[in-house]
Length: 241
Image (cartoon, rainbow, N blue to C red):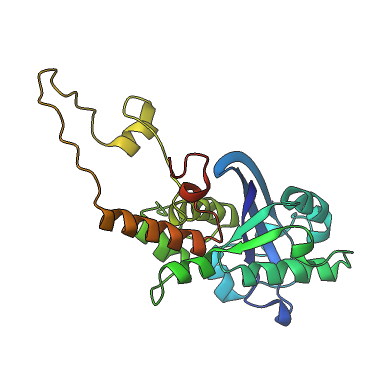
């Protein structure tokens, strides 16, 4: 399964007011693993950037003086997302801007759904956590995803953070590292491995009760429904083994 995590930065809040995209950031995941393939571009919007928007992302028009226009990178961008599932937080916002840009250049396929499918992590989060705050920052706190570098919004940085939030939110492992494998291992493990003595007594095996097994099945069913059939524990070859 190929997925592309996507984010944009813009000159303002709405394409209906003529606002434009000034940055696109995408990263690729295959079978829920980040591959390292990315698409990233700053874009010249041919208009001023609202002060409120600039306070969010810190990008000025002067910064974009030599940046390409959207039409110049459109083919490369569409090739990158082709046939993928787009993972977007508040997809209506980003998709609206992307389709506005495609419409302005008169593209033959101006709808994003003509190129890829879309999964909105904001809608997913609202199903999983009704009545709670579900901004990207709130989800980072809930799922213990490090967003300390996010002093200002950035399309590629936000896509990277969203990929970790999405994996955590849908039950996937974000990191796997062991002590002794460099800095990443120390950060993830935090505690050294302790060897049990050879003469220790046998470990007691505590088996789940039927009530606990039923609660577990109900939880998996809820995850499967919220993720539209993507619960890996239910659909892997080992499920039910």
